[in-house]
Amino acid sequence: KRRRVSRTELEQDSQSPDLSDSSNAEDLQAIFKRAFEAKFKPLAPKTQKHKLPEPAEELEDGDEDSWDGIEPEEEEQIEVVEHVVVKHERDGRAKEEAKAFLSSKPPSLSAAPKPKPQVVEPADADTEAGNLKNDLALQRLLRESHLLDTSNATQSLTLSGSNRHKAIDLRLQSLGSKTSILTQESMPMSHRKGISAKAAVKEAQRRKEAKENGIILETVNKKRKRE
Image 1: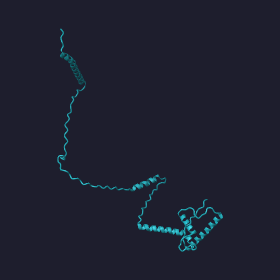
Image 2: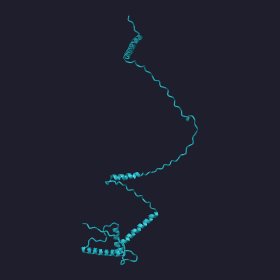
Image 3: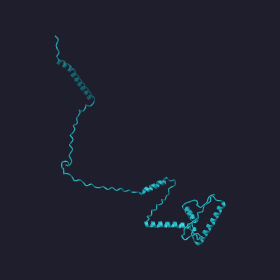
Image 4: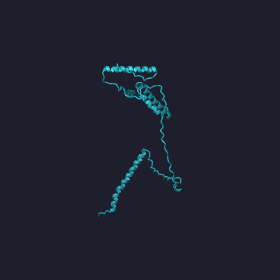
């Protein structure tokens, strides 16, 4: 008769090849290990490093344990900051050196010292302003003195008529006017020569009388003729 195979026997038979395979793999690994150790040095056994327990953080010097109560608020202190600008003398010298370097002129060996500005007091300033005003008035009087001759002078010593126009012309020329307002452009040549000759004679007579009487007159600006 045929023998019946139970289920347990079938399970044991199915598990037995797995166990044999695992044992064969372990045997092969042991053989390889022995062959490796025979050729090389034996492998050192693995050592596990045990971590030391970290010490707990020490508390500060009893600040958290001891409580002294609520501290009084500190008074706010006002901080004053002053900005002071320091001017160095080298800054000005550096600018001068840069100008001298960029200029085409060769630098001079001897550096000329700068004159210190003089501090003028208010009283001296008023005096100088008055003196300057008087000098300008004196120069104007000298330029216009020939207009105040005995024949044309009046009691108030004021200029009128043609003398007034001449005085205005002189003032304009002193301010930088190149031409006189009394000159006429369109005029016959004979009339122009007669007028210029009469003016030259009159001017020469005036200067001669002033020299004899010791009167200082204005200087004459001689115009050079173009070649």
